[in-house]
View: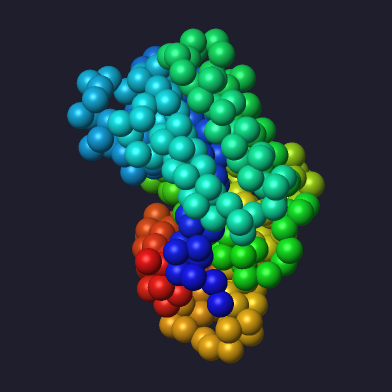
Length: 313
């Protein structure tokens, strides 16, 4: 059995790698959504900071929600523990701590990504370069993931890593959806408008689901279909259902490996069960915001249970 310190390092290394990519995707969503406003785009940028759970910390550093302030705070401000630079530093530190549990290729891709981002984010980002910087962050994290999936043995090391990545990804997808539906739309009268549709398209692009949505639904952007895709479609790699299928599977492998089940197994399977029996109509009848808020709370609870059950200390 792995030491709790090692499982903790693997779990959080992968959560932080996933978080750095998700933060870049969130800023990308803000950039696209701000383009829908001919007047003041500050509401979009404020909603992006809110989605990152960083509103209070941001207001301690800045007075205005601008593209420059938000991108600087979320990408390169090391006083913000959730910035890309901060979480990549922490991911690398965790990776170094569990170096002997990683293949050479995985460690080198993580280390090179950290060095690349450190160079890239050393200076304030020119607004014209922001799309290029965001693409580079997503590319570096994809290289780490590719090295990891291509070289790691499918054992408990792999399982704890996968659980960390998918708990983080599920949280991010839920937050991005919630920001769009609950925060961004100016009023109910905008639902179904050109602005509404463009915002939904921007959300799909931010999670790399724009083209695949068309493959599946062959339809215009509809809130119910997009919610169905990002919540319930088990083949979409950033959907809540896909994330929880992988979390439950990895936890199942650990139960078999160690010969013991914990409360976190029941929690994960209960969340997956709700995603499997839900329909998008039921979710909208309940209220999308309420559903997503409950999901984010349950997802956080699962993370805490995993840490407790597998003694991450």
